[in-house]
Amino acid sequence: MRIVCTQENLKSGLAIVGRIVSSSNTLPILSNILMKTENGVLKIYSTNLEVAIITQIRCRVEEDGEATVVAKTFGELINNMPNQNITIKTEGGELVIDNENYHTNLKTLPPEDFPLIPKLDNKTPFSIDSQEFKNSLDVVFFAASTNQTQPELCGVYVNLENEKLKIAATDRYRLAEKSLVLKNGFSGNVSMIIPQKTAAEISRIIGAHAGEVAVVVNSNQVGVDFNDTQIISRLVDGQYPDYKQIIPEKFSTTLILPKQPLVSALKAAAVFCQSNNSIKFNLDGKNQKLIITAESSEMGKSEVGLAASVDGEGAEIIFNHRYVLDCLNNLDTDNLVIKIVDDNSPCLILPEGQADYLYLVMPIKS
Image 1: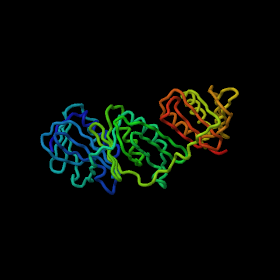
Image 2: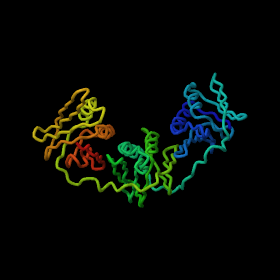
Image 3: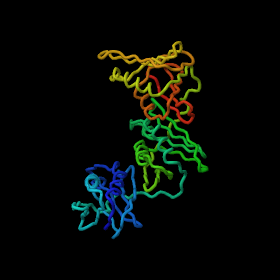
Image 4: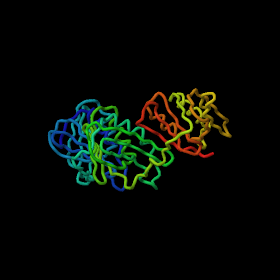
């Protein structure tokens, strides 16, 4: 193999594939990336056996070939080279890298040792605007569980019926759901559980880039194509719980208030509840206020009053403040609607005027 490419293009490609690379001692090849020329471009592959990422970058291919090299070492080297053309070639079991005054030889492993990356069918169940997909994942995936005893809850549930797409995650203490309507006339049903880390990687790779995301699914794998990058991931086995049955239909109290003052109040009050994360919400209908209280036997007590529209019965309810903040930090809205049944029932947090998102959080029983 012999190629010439810009430092900027190579640096960008390595940043895309590098995050999932393993530092496995039992399988050293998993610490490597595979670089392979194909149809006049350089393709870079990485995998940790659960997720694989393939991206391609423009370059001048002078001689076809392939090589594997330690991702961390190669990435750090390229990142610190001048932004000039880089010549890369294979020579006697090494990768030779030349850039202006830099001359480096890196040891390689045989390309045939690199894990086989599966190829999914070209049939595309659905496609979606990249930013719409990224934003939907961002407001959901943080609610997935980290407890591996229930692997199905450690993923993001994606359900598509005809043109209606729902993306959800829950750890049984909270639930986030985003609803979308696809615009490409898709007709069919798809249901899958994507690992939380895969959802996070998809969001990261999309970033602020515009375009269409194509999603391909088979029995146990999903492929996501975006621009010059493809992510292939195993799906989580198992049946996702029927979470619809825990969403209340009737509420005794509805609260409307600006998001940002609530975020600030929760962060300030959190100083006093580091041992148990508990914060009390007092919905004061008489004075049209939300009073947030946090107390610590070691540090003292904090009370913050926020102006709010309170409709219905007054109520006191205790939450894990981290669960509430996780939602608010990911919502792009000016005002919030908070709906409460009682101090033992799930509470709903909604962006005002948006019917396509809900966040359910269980209270802490006093």
